[in-house]
Amino acid sequence: MYEHILVAVGTRSDSITLEAAIRLARETGARLTALHVVDPVPPYAGVATYDFSVTLDAFEAYGHAVAERCVAAIHQAGCEGDARTIVLPMCGSTMGRAIARHAREIGADLLVIGNRKRSFWSLFRENLYKELLRHTDTPVLVATDALPAASGRALALRPRYVETVDA
Image 1 (cartoon, rainbow, N blue to C red):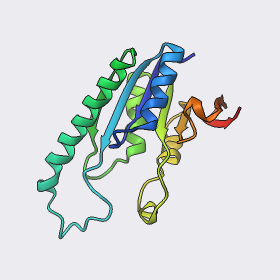
Image 2 (cartoon, rainbow, N blue to C red; image 1 turned 90 degrees about the vertical axis):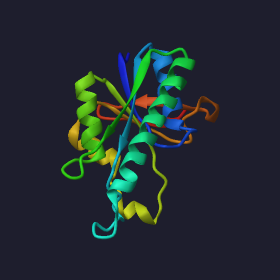
Image 3 (tube, one colour; image 1 turned 120 degrees about the vertical axis):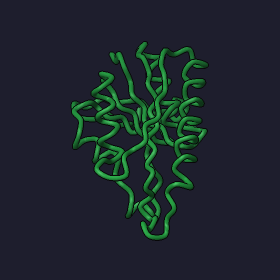
């Protein structure tokens, strides 16, 4: 069904997104690539008061640690795959564009992303799902807390996207 799945991973170590992608990769025999995108410019940081040099190296190092954790989880699950970290340029790109571009480069036929929790800061963050839909024709699966098999939910594919539905 799928040959190459790209999963966008965040910084949480208990990633439901990664678990869902691993499960799909095992079920379909697909190769799995985990991608962590480091955004070096937090939207709430004032340019005049923010010292980028202090944190940029830490962001990048942490991104590589996330990638190493993902590779270990992928291989421990018995899947074929790898993990990569990319750092966005200071301007001119978004996480959604970077993920869509990387998906094209590796020939991914499914994108798996997580569902962000709503908060006050959501007003300032990019809507990753909408941004991906603008920049790719590849189906997008949004993994939520309800996705694990124990919840009694099943995956349903639609032509443009993938969603969870009651089984």
